[in-house]
Length: 82
Image 1 (spheres, rainbow, N blue to C red):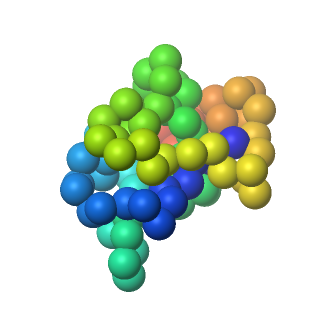
Image 2 (image 1 turned 90 degrees about the vertical axis):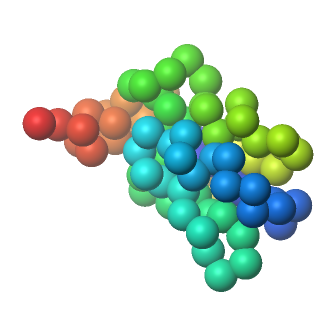
């Protein structure tokens, strides 16, 4: 499952630099997560770093983009294949 930043976001800029997949960017009003790039940090860390650094807990699981851990790992491999 991809992650989603809710409209509670205060644009603090904590999450963007923490994302190892460059899935987070500033949208028109708040930060947004690109579900095609989000692996929930699978392949990098044990848990999503954006959730860990968010001071107001506005990052949630996106039920519209459900993926298994195996699918997330496959996405990680595709993006970081060298």
